[in-house]
Image (tube, rainbow, N blue to C red):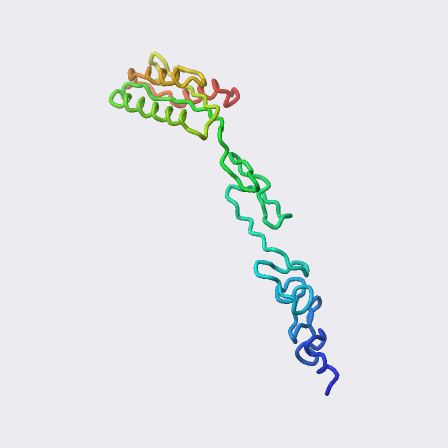
Length: 210
């Protein structure tokens, strides 16, 4: 019997058959070349099987990490359970999970077309805006809610942009300002919506002077 036949099950130079050498870094286990650093059925040594739910990493059985937590931006992979280390904006970390923050500050500005063409629907616009305002005020997810109100018409009318109420926590004052919206003018020069948006953003400190 050739000497090689005596170790075909474990000799990396004669693995399974005489002259069949395993590639560098592989070991011969039961006549088959295996990577003891990553083979979950031969982890670290031939025949060492990793338990279910574990994988072979660098020759050691390691718990498989499942990093799939909602609204998580970064994970702590140093821990087997893979908890969240940093949540997305608007969420807070609670024991490695991300929960929606409460009391989120919000600034809301209501801006409406007050030209004559709105005459038939200005009441509906006021009603819709008031409903939105009330829903925002009643939301358990919003804390520091501040509301502003404005209106715009055409160039050449009595106003192009009218700033009625600055950002305030007084939702009653905002509701009263919404009720001042009225349709008039228009039918001539271009409407001032872009100018109104610019002026409102300047008043609210949303942009620098250009």
